Image (cartoon, rainbow, N blue to C red; front, side, top):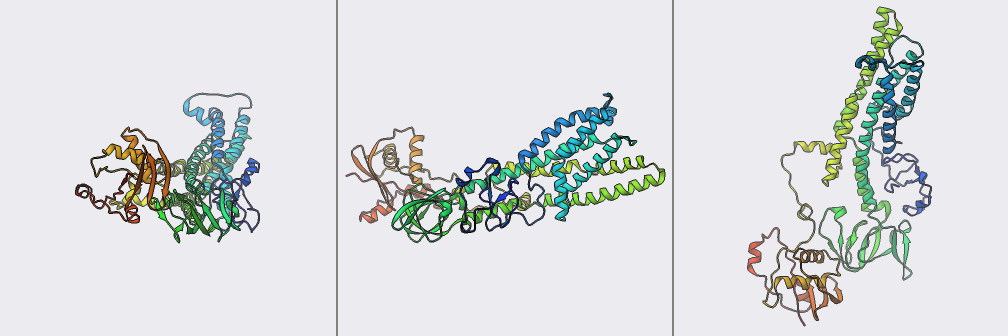
Amino acid sequence: MHLQVIKDEPGKCPLCGMDLVPMGGSKKETHSHHEHQHHDHKEHSHHSENHNHHSDSGYDKHEGHHTHDFLKRFWVSLIITVPILLLSEMIQHWFGFTIAFPGDKYVLLTLGTIIYIYGGMPFLKGMVGEIKAKAIGMMTLVAIAITVAYVYSVAVALGLKGMDFFWELATLIVIMLLGHWLEMRSTMAASKALQSLVALLPNDVTVERHGEAIKIKLEDLKNGETIIIKPGEKIPADGTIVDGVSYVNESMLTGESVPVKKEKDGKVIAGSINGEGALRVTATGVGKDSYLNKVINLVQDAQAAKSNTQNLADKVAKWLTYIAIAVGVITFIYWFGSSGDIAFALERMVTVMVTACPHALGVAIPLVVAISTTLSATNGLLIRNRTAFEATRKLSTIIFDKTGTLTKGSHAVEKVIPLTDKYTADEMVQYAAAVQQYSEHHIAKGILKTLKERNLELWKSENFSYMAGIGVKAVVNGKEIVAAGPNYFKQNNLTEPETPKEVNQNIPDFVAFLERTLFKEY
């Protein structure tokens, strides 16, 4: 399910908590989506290799849990909480109503037991994990609070003098389940960024073996093999170009919005998208060795790291746990020593320990993480480091050096200047669009967009051909039209026409890069 999760040993997936499964032996270094589509859905696999993606910062309180599992537990617990509240003596006292019937305490005991075991299980497991990891935190604090409340309430239901805390137990569990669900949902939303990175790789690869082009699974690709990458295909591995010229879109990995020209001896990276040219590439970085996999590791490790606010909350929860236990014991000793009434002393101790669990802290911190992460994601901002994200509130000046990325990230026609009176500006756009309509080049798309914006007719073209590194040509309205840049003139020993002076005057040098579309009529 999450191909980016790779570990050296068995364990849980940090993204959704499912069990990791072996990749099928040390000979295989990667695993494709297609292979485990044949598995039963209950055994969706995560994949182990040579990296451990768990955060080194401590125990993962959500390990082994699922977002939908928290949500399900929340709704079930919420439904059970309603009758618990109605049957609780304290709630009836506060709101001035009475609901009583023979055996009502046992009904309350049954419902309380169900919500304690079913709703409280994630916190009980979390407490065990935190204690084993020597990282006492919120899970331990909640688990102690609900356990003390439950044990005391059971004793009251079975005859001990006092007032039960089933209502406090139920509301605490419901609120904490909601808080942790919100936190996990934001984390899972962020993990979609990792899944989208994994999706950049193709499932099948065309390689050259014994002089013949054959298709193989991505997992069978090895370093040193020659890959054939057709126009528009995704590049499956890092490599060096041995033949061919093309423009490659690397924006999703490097942030460079303009496709980069690649030719012989140039480097390509896995996950980028080939343009209109065909390339032959020698693979140098397959699977875990690829630049893409290193980006995935970086992003996932950063997402697993906690922010200063979360660390502060965990520290507060740790000390609150110690304080709650200490004050609870002191309270019991004091009241039992002064009154000699064990039931009264127990009630005071439980009240202190249950009240010490901060509902607000358990919900507020996850909400801050969820809201900030969601707002950032909806505005196209991936939070790679939450600690740095918190520090941005102190920023006063931001300096960018990514012109294309910060604008529209695509080519657009700035101005059309006919060099003769033979063609109007609109006709120039129509001829250019007609000849470029079968091209996948970024400039071609910009010209076609301009044609649409001007509501001009798209003329038909015939005999389209691509001139590597130069441009394209085709027959439009019976004329052979060439759409090209300066290289066309150099190759054909033609004099390049002068650019009108007003162009340089009207467009500042630092934002202007003029790709001229020139025509020659035969």
